[in-house]
Amino acid sequence: MESVDKDKLCLLSDSEQKLRCDKVRAMMSKNGVDGLLVSDNANVYYLTGRVFSGYVYVSTDSDEPYYAVKRPCHLVGGRIVMIRKPEEMTRMFEGESAIRPPRRMGLEMGALSYNAVTRLMKIFPGVEFADATPVMCAARAVKTDEEIAKIRFSGVKHRHLYERIPHLYKEGMRDIELQVEIERTARLEGCLGQFRVAGNDMELFMGNVLVGGNADNPSPYDFAMGGAGMDPSLPVGADGTIIKPGLSVMVDVNGNFTGYMTDMTRCYAVEPLPERAARAHQLSIDICAELARMGRPGVEAKALYERALEMATEAGMAEFFMGHRQHAGFVGHGVGIEINELPVIAPRSRDILAAGNVIALEPKFVIPGVGAVGIENTYRVTDSGPMERLTDAPEEIIYFD
Image (cartoon, rainbow, N blue to C red; front, side, top):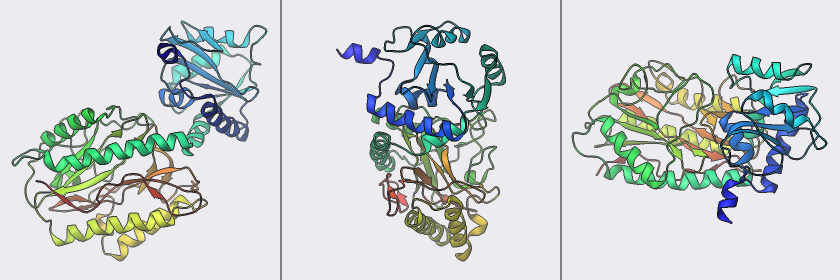
């Protein structure tokens, strides 16, 4: 019986899949789309609970999706068409039980290559096409109870990992050596290692460990602090800096234990940091608490950014807020299957918070001569009260054993 369950194409319960598909169809109707073709791994996982090579087709005319599967070949379930190439998926629209062809089909134009999009368009002559990326992003932004449970579990495992970090340090360690030990411990704790990022303009391995001035090295990516990295081919993160007294050690590593991620940053040190760095770290904690209080359904995402910047300015820390040599253009972001989902907590964001959003808040500071300080937590937007913190690790600066 167990092997049959593993062979089922859709690993979600019927009720959970219907809940997710209903959200997608609601967004499709809002965007004037009556058919949606999905092949991006994150979106396939969202709709089925697994990743496979092929396509999920969602129609506003049907409660259940259709599937065109290339690999693996052993999957079973209703409404499956096995294909060798995309052109063969048109069999979904043929026969007595076939679905009606769409008038306007959504494609993941934000995730697929130009060649993939144009090939799909040729398969369906006479059909109008639209970008389905906003549809899937909006649907995934509001998590179901089952998704929240997975994120909550990742948060517990993430906390257990961070509690072990002080014991991994050895005197004279370089940042990369500590990062390797953290990554090893994370994998043994059950971390999947996969760090899913939407889009193709950011690459990262399992996270960042930034020591001292390396945190002030600008990155090509929109990070508050990037680090130079070990090689120009991956210009982010640890660069071989030796961990010494007086330097901060910022740890921001992978919290993917369930296919759904938590995002958490904590600051470590060998001994107490200078007073200005300690004040900035406490300010980060205070900003998180204030934004969590503000973060309720109906609140504009940009209002949270504006309040964070206001608090940093009032404290005389605006120069160091979200970077020093290079500043990030946000203070938080949605998180889930991918690390950069909606809503975006940024000054020009048009997003409105909704119950079920899961948001990482990261009001960090880079203090010259010391390094990066501050925290990052993952929160759930509740129905009416303040946001719930899902990364329940100590927030103060933590000292190595």
